[in-house]
Length: 467
Image (cartoon, rainbow, N blue to C red; front, side):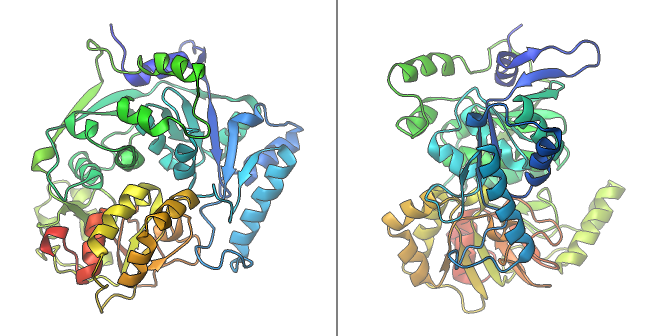
């Protein structure tokens, strides 16, 4: 029987196959680290008298707690300052390469690695962060791990895991203008639910996926975790190779040719069988926006806030009712026309150069709505910021009335000074709209960069077509 892409990568990294109910032991090619989930792992090594097994296969950056303004000043929040200084000390002690705040290669952990060419097809990649699934856009098997697992990989460069199930996500047809990768993944999560992919690795396939840029593919894989999946993958193709060629850590010369020979084998065999399959017709999709407090509570932007009483499942009905109460919305309200206070464009989901270009194209020559408190535009990495400024995007954002910030996670999770206040409503290009995610009592609507930018123009939720 043929094998899926995920099964091939797993087999290529198998150190020892578990017997009976034992997990397999797989080799890890790359571990990415940041300041939040690393302190306990390094302390575990220290207490055990261990070092890092393969220090050249570990790389760290500062992203979650970093300020996005006044980065040359001491960090005001004591907890954030402590976590960042602890990472710096640990990396120095254990010899781990670090890209700190102010470094040209600093950025969100899932954004800076692809830009450097560290993320490559067929690799196994882990990080103490659930959105590590982002790297699956390159045909890598990438997933988030817990703190004890971070320590285990540091010490052994391996991980004990049971094989995951596989799910084919077929996105057939082509997307219409104004509909993008974020709309595809939000539509998928709305269709199968936030637990619909539990225990599975998604493989995204179909014409709409093949048409996407690498930035768009990373958006898709990034939010696989929001559908309950362990990881998301896309088979590498010419788009992948063109993106990687010439990057600092990509193979070169003869090594590039050898890598390509392997990368071309990384596709699901025609006779392979997935454990599950789901299909979306891209040609029928509209821009999506969330109304509730999890990424699965979303509807097409022309839709209305649903009525919980019409939901058959009691748990779903209660969750929807509680979400509407928190969000301050009523059943039957049109999504279009809901006024927002803040617009956030950024995060590891939608803070890449393609995303910034899309937002700038809508904002150019316009000005932010008078009812808005603020519009934050935060690049996902310093290299993305440099590229955006080279293209003049920063001037478009500033002329529009937006705040152009330094790289970091920013308002995506509010572990810094970029937070909502209680009752404040945002439309955000990030990945989670949980209660308090962007600040205690804050209300978050997830959407694409195009929808967020259009909303910034009008002051109420809308699509670019409404402008």
